[in-house]
Image (cartoon, rainbow, N blue to C red; front, side, top):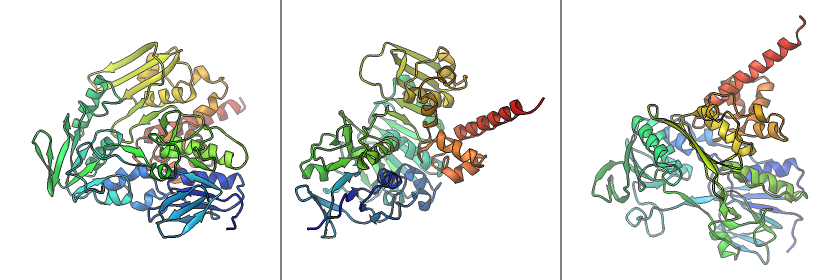
Length: 477
């Protein structure tokens, strides 16, 4: 069988695949480039599904830009098996597709709840009135005025709040003692519970749903909830079935090395399906960074992927919440600032003078500043109370001369829904888009959950003040 040279095929048509094709095109990739996606539509922003379900966004608002024109994009096409010996992909359409280099960007799939027998069919699909929230089709199934969300992880909380914004009655059921109990301390979890309740979300902690019939969900303590739609937000797991069946090494995810190679040197994996050093990648930021590194590797410049700190920020305009998973090793100290009256809290753990873990609720400036410190691996500033209370002007003044410091700040992600960095926003501002509305139209920042609106507004004000000061300093006296 004849084969075109350097043929790259990507299985998966999400943001990671789009970033990779775009970067390969920019870097001058030679040879055919094909993307296979099993969903019927093109690439879209999965993190914005909650805003689609709430009615705040239309389906076309989620659509991502097209792949470069030279890319062969095949939507509605499933890859059913890999023949690694012959380097062929078997397709659901019955055909085969050859590759020289294969990239698995298959993402993640929903994890069913522990007691799912009465909620799912034997093949794992939801029963009538029950749905996951992973695709646009799932979002369209969130119908009715009364909804129950099972699982108070990040997606469950974001879904509950989005549905409340849409005027629905929402009950959030969670098996743990409080929302996000695997990530937050008891005090922060208590404050989060109070905020959710104040926003009109009814919480059932320490409970789970054991059955659902049209219009009604039954909890394990016997309570019955009026429910038009039951939404399962019980976590996700990397999609590894295709890789595992082909004999590639897998654990929780598809195992890759620093160059994102799998156990087959012709196959790479990026995004939510990939696992490096015992940790599965998660989130659009990690996927974007991996796609950038792999693009360089595939165009002749081997570039290791630099693992990113695991920072999670809730995509909800009503609640400013972010946390950093503590890295390996014992912390040397911890620092907390608590405001019980306003249900605000900042807590960080410190090792070798740097932030190792964090959880911040209700302090938006502190969320931004601590996130920047963690990403840049900068030392904790001496004015740590001001940092945690958000009263200092960022953590940057003490580190302005650090090598790479300015670049680290510029590359900090401001809009997590659309992966827009401070650098992107600054470039758009310099190009003449000077208001939040104009920046939103140019970069899509603030058009997701809206949680970054204040940060974008502050950036506009800072850039305007900087430009004014520069002009004043340069004017004749």
